[in-house]
Length: 170
Image (cartoon, rainbow, N blue to C red; front, side, top):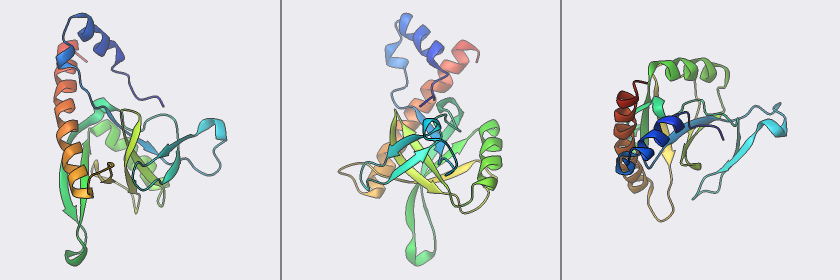
């Protein structure tokens, strides 16, 4: 899957000896491939706990440098609240998500961290605000614990990516 345009900045920081400043968790968002997509234009991802298999388009819809923030939130009817990882994305990726989500109602977005699928979001309607709510999973952790652990790791990496972008003038 193609999701790392920061490679140049990462390698220059590595060469400069700033390995501790490198992000360790890169999050990308992929969209479920339409049924009409040829097999060579799809990649399969598998969620680690549920084992759900999803065919996605191989290029990230949202790349790591477009993720602005994550938070753990509860949403849903009062008697059926669920824990989600809220992923907030920049304006450009938000416009892409708005376009694709309007055409892909019923499909799923997949949150991938370091080439591993960790979360899923069913598109119930068009996403117009750049806020994505993912059910996340991690082996050995409850949904709530997985969301908190992932939130902490991703926000640390988001800050490092932001510093890299400032340093490189991206």
